[in-house]
Amino acid sequence: MKKVNSLRRIMSMLCSIFITLLIIGGCGTKSSDVTTDTAQEGAVDARGEVEAKEKTPEQNLEKSSETVDEKSVDKDEKGYLENEKFKPCTIFIDGDDFIISDTYYDAVWKYDGEEFTKIAGADSVEDIYGVPLGGYNDGKTEEALFTDPFEITKFQNGYAVSDTKNDVVRYIHDGIVETLNAAISSGGKEKPCEFNNPTGLATDNNGNLYVSNTGEGEIIRITGDGKADKVLVNLNEPMGLYIFDGFLYIAETGANRIVKASIKEDKAGVIEEVAGSGEEGMKDGDAKEALFSSPKTLFVTEDGSVYVADTVNSAIRCIKDGEVSTVVEGNTGEINAYPVTPTGLCIKDNVLYVCDNFNGKIYEFEME
Image 1 (tube, rainbow, N blue to C red):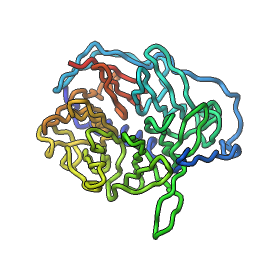
Image 2 (cartoon, rainbow, N blue to C red):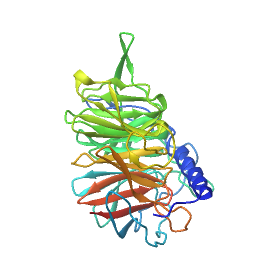
Image 3 (cartoon, rainbow, N blue to C red):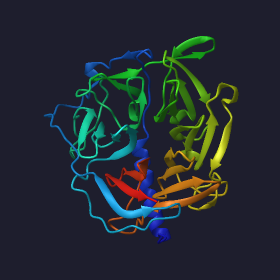
């Protein structure tokens, strides 16, 4: 693969840091058994009124003729998508569908392989440049407002969504959106569980929801009956989460590394390093010496390979058998480069899907 020169790398890092600041901003809570409340109707926007127009991404999924192995993939020339405003952040597999968070329209979409359908999120007030401002409002899915939704996961009979800039976790189910409420013990007393920039989400086989409370450097677990506890603390900006084989894998964004911790009660709280020396940079090889730059999310395959959206490096990295390799790397020096800021990824039917939040595209790579 071509290596970008230092000037291009600096430009890439500045763009990605800007996107990071846009993505990370708020946090909060709510539930069903995990009790739920409805945000006040008046809390919608208070920034004026606009005529609501349904907006749907047009062709957002770009297919690549390239293949991905455990080493690298070269890019072919690509043009911009017709709808550049769509800003996919993360992507979640639910059966035959893909559930996608969108930080431009502040919405949640479903992609069934042919078309996009909005699951939740109303059209919000726009700024003077026509950019949706988002907001905070519970209620019917078509009336609900989000502000920078980050990650999505299955939860109970619907989906949990980290509504980052609103400092809450939302619950989409049965045609409505609610804010999850959970109680956490403190000093022998229970109090509402509060969030500060929640991002990553994952659920285990017992129905527990794990939340990256990024602004506080901790992982919070919410049970089905609305009890919350801090299962991991003292992390440096944890973001993406993934549960595999009894372990919670974490993209520790601020520490430029990937870690994991057992979710079993007798081993809870012990953090193990998976990859990354802790220094920022771009280096493959031995997992403990490898370098990452603000990794945001991850995905673990059945054979235990960990794929990482290494955002500032504009790359997708693979951790397997104690080694790190780069499987996709954007050449940020060219206009049609991809991906610029990979923020979300998943693998389905031997195809790697990558959300490029900055370019407003989802790329598709065949895997060998």
